[in-house]
Amino acid sequence: MSQRTTEPRTFTIMTEMAGLLVHGDNHFIVDGPLPDRSSALELVRRWSVIQIGAENPPHLASWRIKTKEFRENLAWGVMVPGNGGISKAVTELLGELAARGIRIHDSRTEDW
Image (cartoon, rainbow, N blue to C red):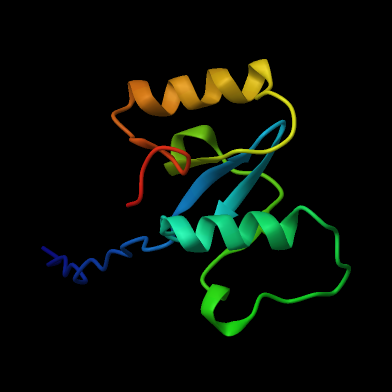
């Protein structure tokens, strides 16, 4: 009778986060932790003007724009005022996040 040996299992804990940064009628899917209010405002200012090849300064290196992400992986939401209203699709996505218990931070009314 052969004896089976089992290797110890290893698990990978995901530490990366993704979130939604909404700026008026525009939005960014962002890879990184929930930014504080001042970082969110600075990210929006930097990313609202396309700068090909530009990199974030060191204090904003924790965040980068992603081209896509599964909705289920979004872990935070931040709203920053901008031109125009929020699109219906982004409004629905913010509603889905809130329904999952994710707090949507609004830079107009709070500092977190």
